[in-house]
Image 1: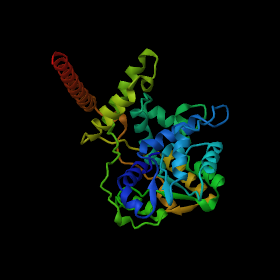
Image 2: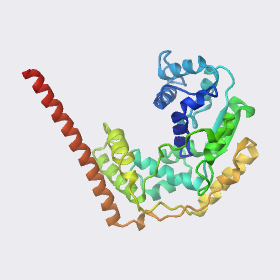
Image 3: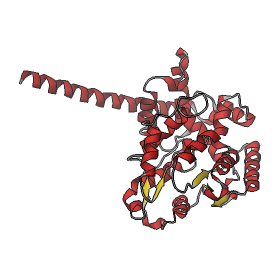
Length: 344
């Protein structure tokens, strides 16, 4: 998660015809098929879980993969933190040669990215509390457990490599900030033995929100949770807040301050993770040194003014008002059409 996956997925999804010329397919009719399949796998088939449905999303995706000639690519970041029993289900479900590629990015950038993502997913945890939980690595803390499940690269790499064999596992590092924008795709194309220049890379970016927007969303999540129900569990939160308000609205705001990360413990902990990866000796595309954390330029949330947060809140209010107006207009148009049909 937060290691260039959306970019790779968008390139694969937007270049299906070009991939087909090389006998390569991107699994499913649309990427959401992969999401549904992995969610099905997460919820079924493990210890004390109901069995996988033969007609469920996972088995359906697998059947399509196994019946497709050539190479089939699955890219879904929720696969990374799976336990060994689930990795074995994946391994044993798929026919032919299985190759696993794990993408990873340095700890400093990912701590910031994961907090910003958590806020978009309904969290009301403050930045300082989030940092403290990540630093503690306390498995009883939901924040710490979720973070390290998704970002403990050495543990994830070891689990997958052990299950599929070191000859079938590759760790691909995300280039540092300032590297050419096409370098990540060039690395993945190397895995597929493709000419990277033959593919269209002008795809939708998965942009991050600014810090003023993040603080506004966190406050919104806090308010929504006052009834005792976490914000993310409210009906339509994902649609209305994460997608319509944030990803299709506030993410486009310009000139916001960015979240900074320069804590010494982050640098030290990231270096320890890289040391462990070196000892494990995985095949690497890129350079493990790119996983050594560097300070992320930006500010602390306390340095974001109330005025900056108010601007973000008002833009959010305007965004949702516009959506409401558009939906009301469409609703009234439907009513008028029905009335005309009844009177005809």
